[in-house]
Image (tube, rainbow, N blue to C red; front, side, top):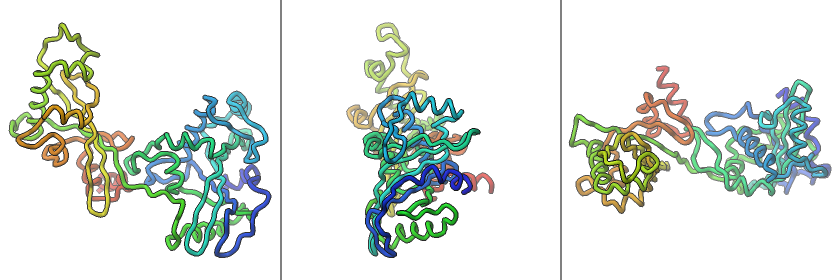
Length: 371
């Protein structure tokens, strides 16, 4: 909290006029919220201030987003000016340690809502504190709606930046509320925050994030059991591609071989599956998205499940999609969301996904390895 106290003079320029705050209800009270890049929990699945800073910097450098001197927006800071600030202060914008959300809070006895107005960026260097500037939320919102947050195995996949911000799934501290600042004692700030965002009140603005994982795994080919589902999948797909060699070149084989001269037998050497897993009170629902084949050790383009349906690939009377849902084969997890998985730990990760809290996947793995 010493860092927060040190940079406080740089941020207390939010609003000079604020409505009177009542004990139990208030409307559109300016609130300044502090996020530290160093205090975010792994269980959230993302370090939001880090990713916001990286995306915003990229947009500023491309001249696609305006950076201002302060929330009053008196002076625009160009990409060239920002680079000059970095050079003069021997600092880096993308290594910013502190960001601040400028918000408006409204709360009554039964519900609470908040609106994000903008974001300020504060950093430190050996030359002291640096205020890089402020971005207006309405300016960055189109980009926040388009771009998804990168999340680890604990997070939920396919969440855009706007959803992540309004989910409140990050550590944050209230540092200014109306005309009241909390430079020395943050206890009152904590009380205001807890009263506003208590479970007893309906959270109007809060975005609900459904537990969703983006799963990648490879199917193991059981060469010792020709009746196994894994073996029959490899053999069946080999037959399809050898009988329809044009499909092989259409799906990426032309990157490696010439259609007219390449006559070698096509052997499926690896099968990778991409799926979306969703979890609710009734269980886990799996949705296969695509299959990526390696033929003669060459990676082809991902084939959507809808395309594979047209190939009429069955094992017995079951189509490929049903086979993938039943999972009567052995497989090796290698990626969950944006996290690359140690394949030697695939059984532990798989058990964590099926039996443990989805926000605690990495914790379960660490616990299993230490016991």
